[in-house]
Length: 156
Image 1: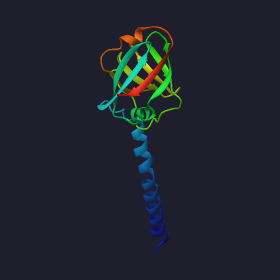
Image 2 (image 1 turned 180 degrees about the horizontal axis):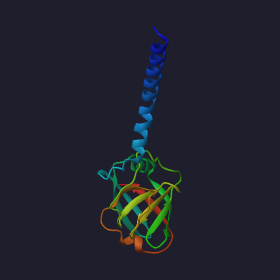
Image 3 (image 1 turned 30 degrees about the vertical axis):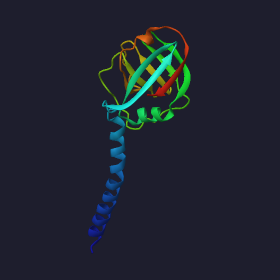
Image 4 (image 1 turned 45 degrees about the vertical axis):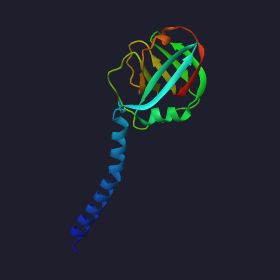
């Protein structure tokens, strides 16, 4: 085998090895930027505070499933800005499979990736650091009541 052939063979082997190692990394990168599935599941939750109740149907994504696995929760719900209420969770949720989504609208139940809070929207919003967990089933009027309250979140 000539010196040039050995060099080309080593180059081909090295190139193939690097390409094979890069495939999982590329696939993982695409996963992180793929939009979270907007499809609803049969998992529903109840959010109760101040003698008011909301129900939401969760989306089919890892973050929503992680939230469901934590239930029931007894926490606090409070106003945040003029378009949402937030609930501080006891731990961060998985962000696996998260990505940008469209069609943001009042009545969305989301997760703030940066802070690890639930965001319950009753007004228009646009924010890149969110994962949509689901939507409220029958309106969001209870969110319009201002104040801070104990909240119970449970599966239905």
